[in-house]
Length: 163
Image 1 (cartoon, helix red, strand yellow):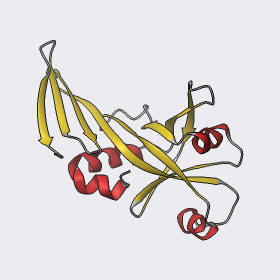
Image 2 (image 1 turned 90 degrees about the vertical axis):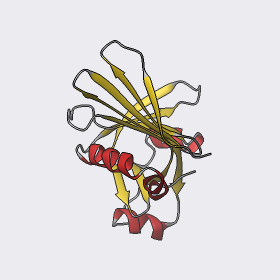
Image 3 (image 1 turned 60 degrees about the vertical axis):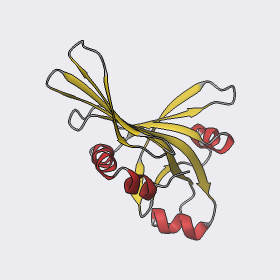
C-alpha cells in the first residue's frame, strides 16, 4: 500500500491538484462495503497529517464497522465545489489502535475510530474548453492522462510508467 507521501512522490502534480480539491470542502463521500458486499456511502472528513491521510468516525458507526471488516474504500471529494475538477481516491483503510498515535493525529484522546487511508488509485477529471480530461494514477502501474475532445476518440498519454 502507498502512503499519501508515497503517492505525492510518484505523481506530485496530480497529488497537489487532488489535495487542493479535497481541502476545498470539509465533508466528502466515502464508499465502504457492507457485510453482504453491497456498497454503502457515508459523509466523512479527511485529515492530511504528515505522510498520511486519515478518516475518523464516531464509535460504533456503520462506516467504521464496514472498514474494520473490509478495509477497501473509495472517497469522492465534495461534489459541490466546482473548481479543480472531480477528485477520487481509493485503497485500503487501516484502523489505528495505539492511543498515543490516535492522540497525535486527532489532538485529543476522545473515543473514536481513526483509519489511515493507504492509496492504491487516484483519479482527477476536469474539462478544458470542449475537452474532458482524466488523469489516473495506480499503485505499481502507469500514471496516464486521457483526453476526449468534443465527441472525438479518446487520446491516451502515459505520463509515468512504473514498469
